[in-house]
Amino acid sequence: MDLVIELKAVLELPPDIEVLRIEASSAGFRFMDKLVNEWESQANRFDKHGERLMCAFHNAQLVAVGGLNIDPYVDDPSIARLRHLYVLERIRRQGVASRVARHLLDSARTSFSGVRLFTDTAEAAALYEKLGFARANSVNATHIIRFR
Image: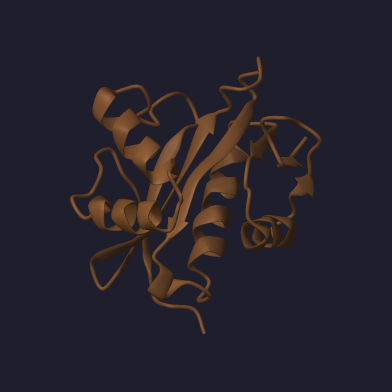
């Protein structure tokens, strides 16, 4: 059964992003550190055409985050990159990651011809493949989905 969550595109990082960052970091996932550091340095604010940062809230508490950027690893502004998808461990396996990812993919369809991503876990790869991504043969992307 899926949790009741509220998805919001955000223009500022929620204060409780630290909870996700600390948990991810302690589990060996450094991409949440990168998200916070790039936000604070203004290197990446998910504010270019078609980009967005989504947060998922359960009972007004941040439980997940995921972003969509123009893919910085290809010279094609019509290709997006799904990034920094993280769900609190205690909330996993309840449909939250799928909801965040589907929302980002639905949004991407209006501005991009495809989305790439990189993951190094079998669990995340299985999720993305279930959502329609195919394995990619690229140094900078493990998966891709094309819309047109």
